[in-house]
Amino acid sequence: MKGLPFNKMVKDRFQPVFIIMMLLFILITSDLSFLKNAEEKGFSFRENDSVKAGLLIFKDHGYNWIRLRLFHTPTQLPNNLDYTLAFAKEAKENGFKIQILFNN
Image (cartoon, rainbow, N blue to C red; front, side):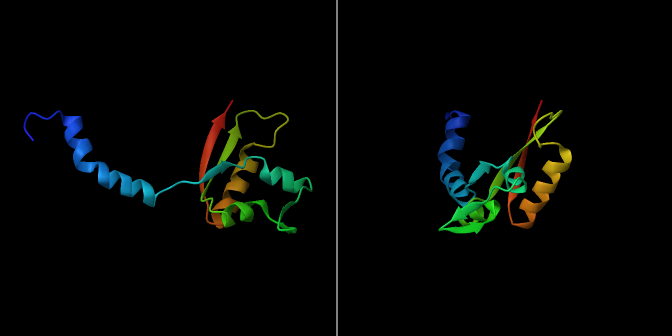
């Protein structure tokens, strides 16, 4: 391996391992920041003509992560700390991993 650039050596040696790791940890995610608010306002989500919780529809279709936006000073949006934490807890109880984005 003497004389090979370091990045070429690493790429050649570890690329198969990296590809396998990526296949094992595929993230399927969506921004569901307003889903809880929509359900609280009376919106219902359907699948095959049956009303179903929005989170469960995403879970049943293979989503394993959700993204929630937390706004610093929401004025007309529900995404304050209490709303976001409550929704994150509900998602966690349903087996989701959570990514929180902080917005101004």
